[in-house]
Image 1 (cartoon, rainbow, N blue to C red):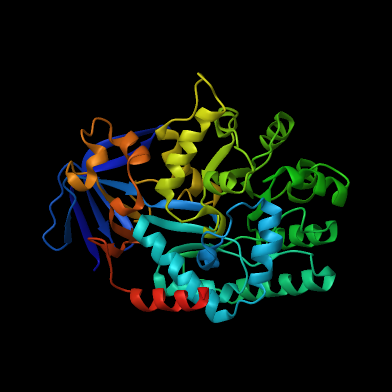
Image 2: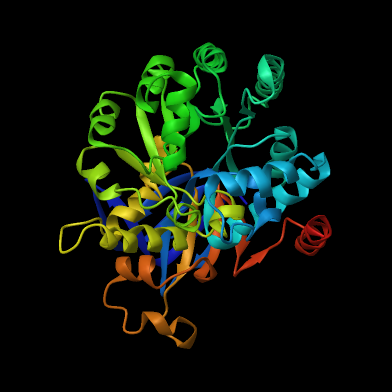
Length: 428
């Protein structure tokens, strides 16, 4: 369908650094938002009635590992390093291309179902992730993770795999963009980071890296590189935009240096809590002018891809470190999950807010005061309710690039039953 008209909805608008709700109609033409107005009539358009619903920008998951759906709930009782070394990396070595494909399909279904329209991935066998994304019609930022854990030969092999992935991309497909991704500074040697830096500059791509996630990482990086993580970042990536996943252990000096660089922090609150990494002070980061986006991490550590869970947790945990002080609000975390995520991925001109001329990545969320939404009654503050009392289950419609991927909670373009069965087989 070339035109879609969403009527009678409450539109979440991000304007002048504020988040407001206005009653508006939205006309979508092909892949873009054509018009936003109080009353739009169009006899040719497909009509969606959004009465008693909020129309939001599609949520942006700025850090995850898409195929890790099959490792859901494997973190219990583990620290980060224990989880990676004993439970994840050995199992990842056993995965096949088909495993990666089906696990990615499951994650993309989960995204569509819970209102996430764009995800920033870091994994391997990336052609299979790309294939699943193309079939799911989701917006994806893709890479091939690079490490030096297998020596220089392993680094070169991974770089070669990334270049093949990037060179074989469909240049007409705006739904899939790319980053260069060293896994972390503790899994990459100086030689590896030098090569990755040159790769990012060669293709003019952002860099996506795990950064200061845990206490162990701080000392490991000093031992491996002879200096603190912030100086490693400066040395190799001063000329590139960097997407720094986690940033839990930033100190005041780190923040001051980051303010001089082109970078974004991606807060992953649930994963950090489950792995005992403590709490990133996102209140301070935002006050200091850093761009802070929001992510779930993979389901292995983050449990799920529900960005509503991530928003609620991100807001609540700041009360654990800012007693009786000003801290981030529901409006702040909505921006973290939308426009800040778009900025982190260098996509803010296309997505992240509902504006005429932007790509039509939208979700429609049921907020009607009824038994199914008992937590929202009375609905005195739509924005707070979206953060504190809503989940992905409230999402009724998901639209990506102007195409309806889910309507009335039904996904029609994917064989949902088969994806579920294939992933259950892999998990066994």
